[in-house]
Length: 488
Image (cartoon, rainbow, N blue to C red; front, side, top):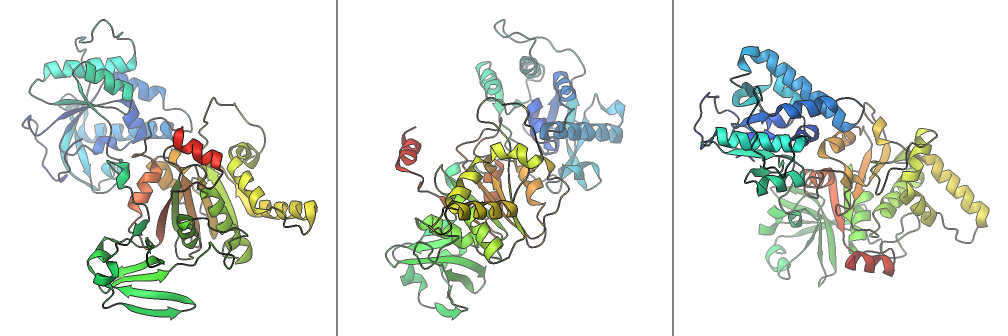
């Protein structure tokens, strides 16, 4: 990927080869991020003719990729009109971006042109070996990149594709190929914010000198100063096993960090819709889910760690007991694990029901009869809960505004950053959104653990005062599920 230089570098027709690279874009990059043509700063972009053909073939439909293709076509059309057709052979000037809005590139909110966009306007010689047939789109792109390398030996030509197999073939043929890194939140998943921090053994020796403590509305607060405070994040959880100390960072300013002792939901004194936390991380998650001033919560964890159960129990407690929210809305992306079972009959909710097995399973746990009312009481409770829980398809979220709702986004690891942005921006006043997922179970093509929208929002929201994140570590489903998660 290009270096993160300022987009204010003036455009030059013949820049030094050592400075300006030539990036050949695969179709899947444009379908993944329609604003990618503005992301390469001072470097040039080349679009093979077969890429335009593939874009034309993928423009119809209501899917996210089809919408992205149409957006790319609009960008290219406006750039051509702005530069004029005689400029096509010399390369269209590529506007730079101030922010992440791709539309700004064609609406006047741009910097000086830095790179140029070239289209394939001539037939390039075939450079592919006989073992690779030239009648596939991927091999056409690969052949075009090889031809550009021979035509411009003074320049570094790089193929950018989200197709791993194409990058492997490129490496075999001596072509430098890269993934599209712009929306990659992290280089290493181990660096992802966990939301939990263990305090070192000597923490209180260095930070306990000027500590203040007080109680307010039944809660205990501390104000702490010291060198480690600067590394903390809002709503991050701190713990020390030796001191039996668990607290939540409620604020950070020049005076230090404001800590609030967590409520212990592991005991019988504090239950949430009849359930208790079974480990430290679950307790932290419930504290986060029940905070009225935390509008956005993300929960990561392997299968059986309790993500859905905790989110649903906290939602029911705040909707039916505290009347904080009008209803619970549950949604998820419909990416099948196996073969697609075809069209489903019925209303929107009936179509989504087969995808909501996790919701039904957890509702059954939360409505277990305690011996009072028998089967009739359990059925009545189940009907009451289902009336306050709405199942909605993600395909119909655009343009909506949800007021005073508790929204659970299940399987959020299968969403791209753009899809998750479109979903989170639906939240109106008084709405809390909870995104849950397991980033080791991604089913969306071309999406990885580091480019998943869930990873993206965890990293981007960690410094916001009204959001929080917890990575759940321990499985609580069953010993069979725990053992299978470890060895399979």
